[in-house]
Image (cartoon, rainbow, N blue to C red; front, top):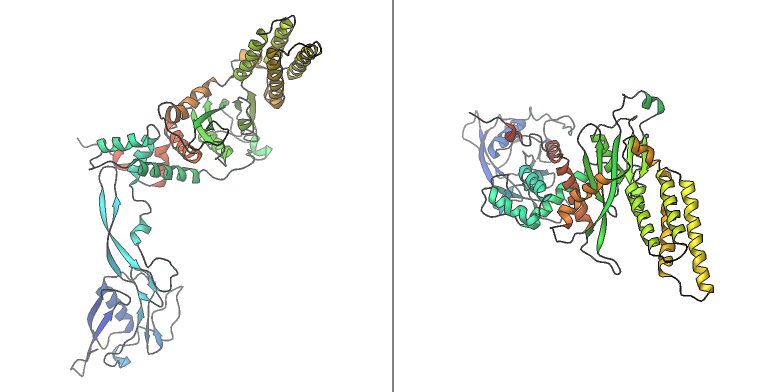
Length: 508
């Protein structure tokens, strides 16, 4: 500090230094003696290019000076009334101040200065790549951190890829392999080199993770409210048909005794009015399958009094999916799978050469007729009669010393399995003949095409690669979003103004 020669109005020369910074950063400030301590704070903001966005205080000879703000500390002395000249500062006397602009501060470390970093942050939009100059800040001593520095740019830009480029990667990766997406981006965008397939895979899976996070928690049951609320709801539209079926994808890891594949559940929801939508998930990975199906129905505008017909093949993995999903839901066992199982029984019985062949064929045909008309009790009784008849023939052969018939043993096992299948799905067996005559759906033929559309074209047929269950599940979510034409809407909800330039009218 240096004192001017004028006795009427002295000028103090202050040297402001930022602590814990290398190389040293400082300012030399000529300040009049009648300058208040509060005014000195404003001078520091201008000198260092700060924006006065945080509270501040000066500590001079054990006393704190500052301006009280709402939510801050109180001071005994108003900083607007204390003048620098009244403090009678001595030469080379030091006093700290804790003040900041946009930079973080620490009560013990003072302002933290930025040091330029050699690193660069790459931010490639859909057409170009930009390199932003990145700075590293030293961690205050009061912060408990393993790293000595941190980057504010990394905290502001949580992802290093523009939304437009991420959208293109997700949309194209849902159709073709990651390597093909990288080559396509290299051909379409003006960049020097294409992205690595592994980088594209990470970006796509990050998008899928974000889609999973916005889905919401799983619930055991979904109701339409109280009975009064259901009756007061708007008049429903035509029923919605939902089909469920399973497929298999080649897995990366093959367990001992397994074929190396895991099951994928795919479905399709078809309203009488509006576009159909598909959904899919890996059963052993997904923890909220009901929520996923419910979200599809809600996107189609389902109402509490609207009827839903759920058709499935009766497998263990899909039988419980539609339970308690909607107050007006109906579960129907797919007739195609029932008829295929009966045809296998008929083919096995035709291979038997003996007097009981005709009785077996007629009995199986009676089972088919009973099931077609929804008579589960009579069909069940006939099945068990056939099982007893086959067991009786096998017992006669054993007592006569004849070797057991291979055809009868195979038929006996198939009849027992089919009887168990009918018992497990008895509540979903309806009068198929009546529904067929009324023009209602009785089979899941439309779901077979959905399984091929969702999983087979991308995961099985021409894409000869092995998948992890988690990776396949996440990519399925992106693929269904693309097939349902919903991916762009999701990006627009995440990034306001997404694609606004694409929708702008072209100049003449």
